Length: 142
Ligand SMILES: [Zn+2]
Image (tube, rainbow, N blue to C red; front, side, top):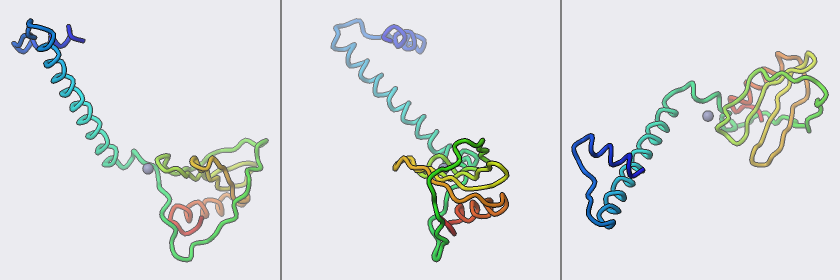
């Protein structure tokens, strides 16, 4: 690392002082601070970018609306079946919902990463399940 910093400094016409370790340490400390600030700047910019790019996030579940429909959530009961996940909500939230299809039926699966629970709505016609999923997204059901 010191050799690389030395090379960069020389490239710009500076020279790492040859005097005692104390001076060298001071210079290295300065470089360390500059590198940390560079990393923070980069991460900060990236964070802003992530917020600004709409495609970075999937749909989010809106907060519950007044009079929202209370859904019945059951323990997952379709382990033997092949489940197709059709739509899903953004992974940035601790709770995600997935619109699923299995054996010609649709249902919504809710994963809570904090509570480590998985629940599902009852199986219905695919169109009805999609309607329920959209209601959940708008905060009209949950
Ligand atoms: Zn998100």
